[in-house]
Each structure stands twice: as C-alpha cells, then as structure tokens.
Image (cartoon, rainbow, N blue to C red):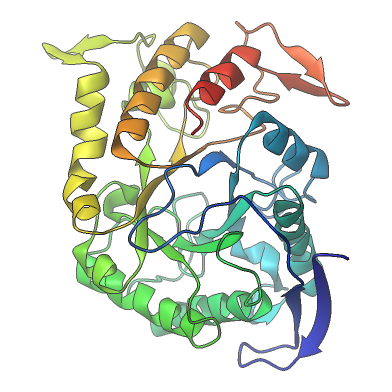
Length: 363
C-alpha cells in the first residue's frame, strides 16, 4: 500500500490544497516532543529548494540521496526553502501546486526511508539572511506577517496527516535585527495558523541573533528551538565566496590561539552549548539545525574541528543537521582540493573520511 494519497479540499489558506494523507507505516523513528527533541536526530540539510532559480538549489529531490542517508544510518533531513519557489508569479496569496508536489516527494522519501523531514522557510516574506534582501520587513509590517502565517497554515493543512515522527516545521531561518518580544509575536501568529489546522505538530523556531541565543518567550509558546554550529567563523566560512572579506582571513588551524585565547573543544562548549544549558534543563527542546565548514578550509582542520563539535553535541544530547549533504560543506560533491573522493551511485563523489567521522557519533 502506498504511504499517501491526495484529495482536494478547500482551505482557509487560499487556493485549493492537496492533502497528503498518511496511510500508516511502522517506523523506528523517535517520537519528538517540544520539551525534548530527539538526540538521535542526525542528518543533513538538502538544498533542492534553497534558492529560486538556482541550477543546483531549485530542482527535484533525488531518491538516491535519501536511500544513501538511510543506508549510512542517518534519520534527519532539514529542507531550507525559498518561499518564492512555493508561490505563483511572486503573489503571496497563490501557492504553486507544482512546487508543492516537489516538496511532497521529499516527505514521501522520508517516510519510505525512515527519515524525519523538517521544513524550514530559509527565505520568508519580509526576511532572509541571503541576498538580495527582501523589500518588506517581516518583523515590523503586517502584510508580510499575514503572508508568512498564511503560508505556514497552507503547509500545515497539506501535511496534517503525517505523524510527528516523520515531520516538523521550522518557522524561519536565523532571525536577526529583531528583539525577542517582536520575534515571539510574529512566530506566535504563524504557530496559531499552524495549530488551527494541525494542533499537535512539532514546531521549531531558530534562536535569536542568527539562531544562537535561546528565547524564553518562544519556549513559553510551547515551541522547541534550534541553534547553529558555525563557530569560529574563520574555520566555517574561510574563503566563502558569498562572505565579503573572507578571502583575506588567515589560513585556518585547529585548535587555535587568537588574542591569547585558546580556541578548542572547551571553548566551543562555552561559546555554543552553554548558552542553551538553562533552556534544556528547564524542559526546552533544542537541536543544532545547521553546522559545518566550507570547502576552502583544509580538510584535516575541518575534521578535527568537527569531532570536537560532535563530542559537544553528544554530551549536550542535541541532534544535528550538517550543512549540507551535497555541496561545499557536505560529504558529497564538496569539491575540496585535498580530498581523495570515492565515485559512488551514478556520479556522486564521496568524502569517506568525513562520512566515517559523522557515523562515529550516530546514536
């Protein structure tokens, strides 16, 4: 029996929406709760809907990638989405059914291969950390807030039959330039739109200040949170083409002494993990939604830095999703100059050393 069927219903979200109907399937995936996101969530970000019009970032999902991840022992995929892919002709009120069918395939593959799917608006109406910037402001203007909530309501209606073991929603990527009270206000509007259609869906909000600062107001909304693992910036974004000045950074090493301070595993724990200790101890679910290092950083440095992070994540009981699976931060087709790749599965180039390291820390 297939895992899903489609039926057409009218929804308050606007256009007719197809409902993804889950027909039941046994799974070993953990049941997430808002107070405790599974420490066993380990996986990758998939960039197939990351940027509208990009050759590698606006394309169908590949079932081979889900099978590889599952075969390797991973069970979590975060899908950062450019909302412009999901709408018609830049009209916030008109969802694009063709694009939604692409997203359906990712959910289908997740169910088939026992991988939890976390949907995220990386670019939302009125906000993005990417370029170009949005022309409106999600934090201060009513219209983008309404569109943001409406889109999440539409998505919630479509996938309301998919169990939490397989699906969660991550509102908007890396909020910045917004105070905690305003952020919670905007997130509550979207959460209300979701819960009106799917009351029990697991919801995750990125922390403040690009995801690194937990919010008590978000916790009070019964929403889990996600942080980042991009510290220090010298290692993670060395010579990253999209970061101005990164080509002038010194060649990274790890551990490193900077301004008479040793940056090592303990420093990473103090910098990245300890700010989240109180939230976790008080019953707030947390995970690392993104982490990793760009392909210009020497491979041996990246692996040493990654292992220190993996140890810290494990000790903190936090699941994680590497940015990315396929691409400059990932284990596939990362195009590093100092890696001997394995050719696998019809054209993929595998960084076996990085994969083996990640697998060492699977629960």
